[in-house]
Amino acid sequence: MPLNTVIFDIDGLLIDSEPLWQEAAAEVFQTYGTKMTVQQYNSCVGLRTKEFVHLWFTYFNIPFTESERAEKKIVELVLQKIEQKGKILPGVAHIFEFFANKNFKIGLATSSPPSLIELVVSMTGIGPFLQATASAEELPYGKPHPQVYLNCATQMNSSPLECICFEDSFNGMIAAKAARMKCVVIPHAYNSKEEKWGAADLKLSSLQNFGELHFNILNQ
Image (cartoon, rainbow, N blue to C red; front, side):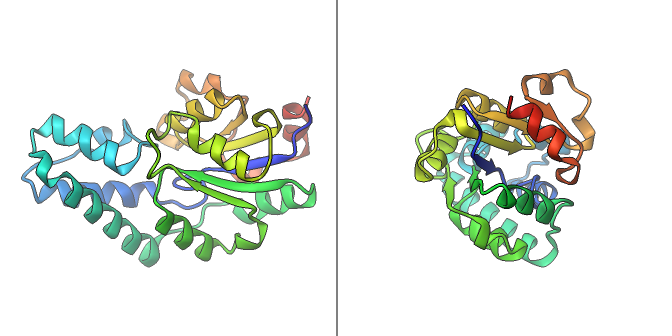
């Protein structure tokens, strides 16, 4: 089935927000007398904030009566940090123009809340390109469950088999593949050589590097 739809993740793919999520999580967990390492944070990239908080509250034995407040505080801090110092990643303008020129339907599918979608769309200027946005925040399951990708495709009246997804996290890649979509993964430098990325249809170092040859390979 020919491809006609592209869906992008947001955090760590369009904007360099993963270090800011890590900063926010570390600051909030520090208020509970715990120190979260970068390695611990990186093991959970792609999860929703509520799942992240639940996991580490269990690990650090923090009362769950505090979980909702911690989740809310992390999101508030992240939005502040992105607005203050978030950097748009290389190739964002290129990749949206590439698919717009092919008359592709374009959407966003993220584990992050709608408030972050709105902020990043405003910062990147990609609003005119978008036909749909989907957040997994209120879904029964987040990534690596495929539902957020399936919801985004449904909004655009697209079959999953007509979709390419762009991801940076392992959980996101698994979600895209579980949805039966093609997946281009752009991992972070610290784990880009790991064998787990072999599950993707294509691995690149930057959105900027995606071109006609890559598109033709995916569209076979």
